[in-house]
Length: 119
Length: 114
Image (cartoon, rainbow over all chains, first blue to last red; front, side, top):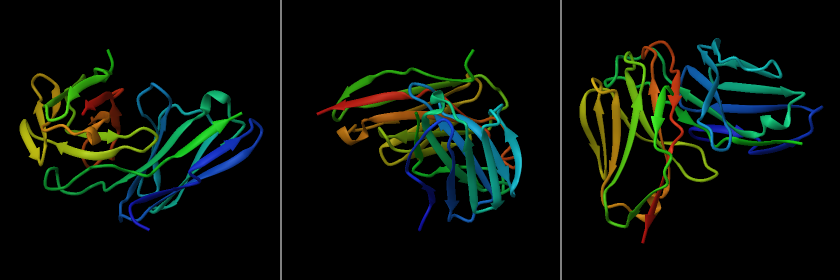
């Protein structure tokens, strides 16, 4: 596997279900991110983890619960979602703390996403 | 005022023409600027990053940054139908060593007609 992988690629769930999205990065990065992309809306940052510590929670409802057990893996646990949570959920990773750009880079690389539908 | 603004388009150009995509941002302390391309149903893929004022060229793509005007653009020369996609402008208004809080524009849809 290379780059950033996400599973599952598609998920349909009812409002009472509990499911988890998984992300794995194979780039040796130390920061990982969850984004939400709804139709006709800009990408929205949800959570940021630097060195496994959560550094950003962008006012995300508690029905979304992130987990970052190590720098390579990131999960998003879902429970009692609403139909309006249907969206493309994207994971990304980057390297933090390198030399100042452009010698270093803070570029984020995205996984293929999970298309979530909440019925 | 939106933090990162782009014209949503669609922008339609003939094959072989130059496509010009524009982006403005509101936070003056922003340090890193990115252009991503996103095909329908796919995830964003990086095209260019730019950090200093001026132009940066990579193949058919040229990114231009003007921090005084808070403006970043992407030029695509010799546009091809395969360039048809949504182009996302993203700005990191955090320090490079503080983790990236990328703020995205709503994207510009580009259509290149054969």
